[in-house]
Amino acid sequence: MNPWLKSPEGPLPEKVLREMSDDELFFYEDSLLLKNELSTEFRIRASGGRFVVFVLSALFFAAYMAAMAVFAKSIPEQQRALFTFPGFFLALGLGVVTGHMLWKHIGAHARFWIRSALHYWPVTLYVVAMTALLFKK
Amino acid sequence: MTVVWDQKVRAYFREKRIQRILSFYSRLQPVPRLTGRRASMVSRDSIMQLIVTFICLMICAAPFAALTKLIKAPMVISLVLGGLSAFLAVELADWVLLKIRRAVDLTFDFILPLLAAILIAVTVVGVKYFNWSTVIPQRFEEWRAGVNERLQRRPLAVRLRKTSGADWMFATNEAGQLTQLTLSEAEAFCSKQGLDWGLYAGTAQAEISADRAFYIWMTPGTRAAQVDPGAFKGPQVFVSSSAQDRHAVLCVRSGGTR
Image (cartoon, rainbow over all chains, first blue to last red; front, top):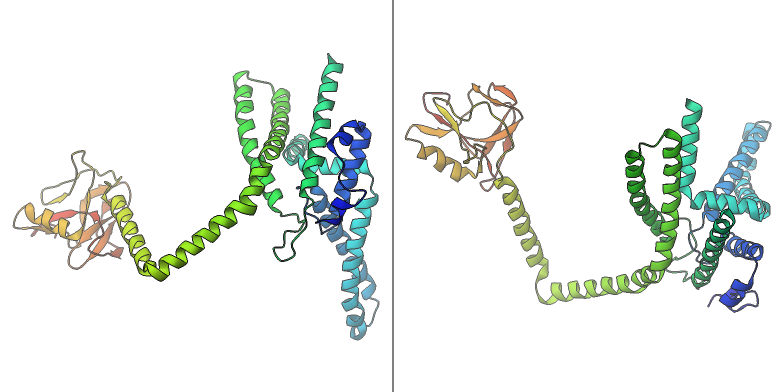
C-alpha cells in the first residue's frame, strides 16, 4: 500500500472536496500534482508536468555543460579530462536538481497554465500555427 | 445571461477538477518494481490520452469543417471555429477517458494478461499433444496460397489497344479483360486455338500496346515476361514463376510472331 494513502495528509473524502472553495481546490490539486511530478514512486494520471520537469532538467544540463566547456578551455589539455569527467556528472546532477527546483518554485498559477497548455495541446498547436501564419502574412 | 454562463462554466470546470482529484487518488497505487509501472512520460495513460484525443479531434473536426463550408464563414469565424473544435475535442477526450478508466484498467491489468496466459497455455498444449508445430505452418501456407490464387484469379486491370491480331491473341473473359491462368491452363488454352498455336516465345510484337506493364507466360520453362507499356518490342524483364502462379496468356501462331 502506498504510505501516502494511509498518512494524515492522504486522500480526502469526496464530501470534503466538495466543501472546498474554488481556490482551495485549485491549490490542493496543484499540490497533489506537484508531489507526484517530482516523485518517481507514484503512478499518476497523464500530466504534462513530468514532461516539463524533464525538459527543464535537460535544458539546465545543456546550459551547465556549455558553461563547463567554456571554463574547460582555460585548463591545460592534459589535465582537462580530470575536470570534464566529474564535471559531466556534476552538470547532470545540477541540471536535474535545478529543473525540479524551478518547477517547484515557479508558482501554482504558472504551473497551471503550462499544464493546461500541454493538456490542451491541439489548441496550443492551433494557436501557434495560426500566429505563425499571421506573422508570415 | 453572461453571469449565468460564467457560473455554468465555472461549475463545469470545478466538477471536472473534483473528478480529476478523485481519479488521481485511485492512481496512487503501490508500484511493483519488477513490472516497472512507474510514473513516466510515456505511460499507458499518456498513450491512451493521446490516442483518444486524436480520435476525438477527428470526430469534432468533421462537423465544424462542414459547418464552416455550409455557412461560407469568413476567415476570422472559421479560425475561431477551428480552435473551438480542438478545445471541444480535448474536453470530449477527458470525458471519455473518465468514463472508460475502469474498463481500461481492468483490460490492461487483468483481461489482457489473462488472455495472454490462456494463449500461451493453449499453444504449449497444442504443440506438445496435437502436433501444432507442423499443422499450423501447413495451414498457414494453405491459407496464403489460397489468398494468392484468389488475388491472381482476378482479371488484370490493363487496357490494351487490341486483344487479338492475325497471328496472336490474349486470353480474355467475356468483358474483354485479360484473364490470368496457370501454366498448364495457358498451354491448354493456346493449343485449343489450333495445331500451330502455342505460348509466346519472345519476339517483338509492336501491334500489342498496353497502358501499363504486366506479365505473360512465356515458353519454354516456367517463366513470365514483362510486357512494357506502349508498343511491345519484346521482353526485357523476366520473372521466374512456379506452376501454380497465374499470369496473362499470349498465344501466337507459329510462323508468325513466335
